[in-house]
Image (cartoon, rainbow, N blue to C red; front, side, top):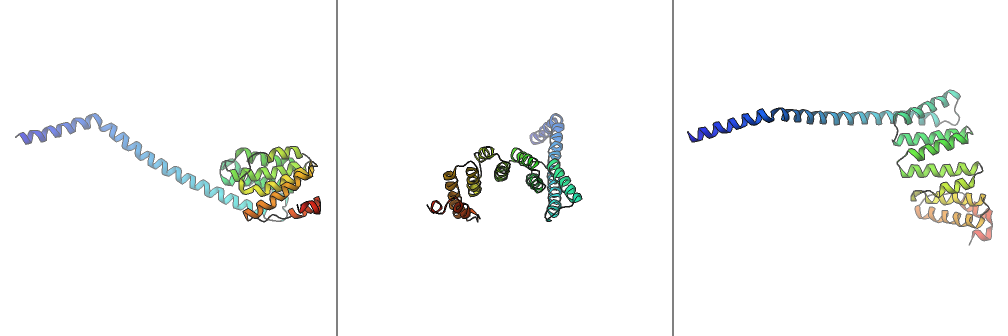
Length: 219
């Protein structure tokens, strides 16, 4: 009888616990299930977004890979760029679309728009390499539009170490425009050294050094 009472007491305790906590337990299970389903739905959404961004970017590349673009093709490319940036912001595809936008503007001789596009990439991207690449291209455009001081300031910003040789090359061009020939020579020489160390081909540097003077270029 003692064992029976013990079992009855255990059963009664379970009933009381379930009465007091059952709804909370059910709610917890429902919330957990909803969380799992929500997480899976979010992952599916992210995957679909990534696929859509990839497809749009591939369409963009197919268009801009041509040597010359007709007006309707340029309009289509710009529409794709806008869609990628607006719908897939903060992704690598949005960063790359911004770089393409700047390149198209340069091809159209609209350097102001090109600089704006590069500035937008610099502000929006979280990727150091992309930001550094945009800064190098912006510095070249600033130099091309007669503003070497602005280019110098741009190059003073952080540039990824993997682009150090390219930075030294552009910096040499900037110094040359500022009539700082000795600084230009040092930058070109540094560019050659870094390119060799990093195993990166960098063309035209020796020619730039030669143009500064054959004797000095060999120092």
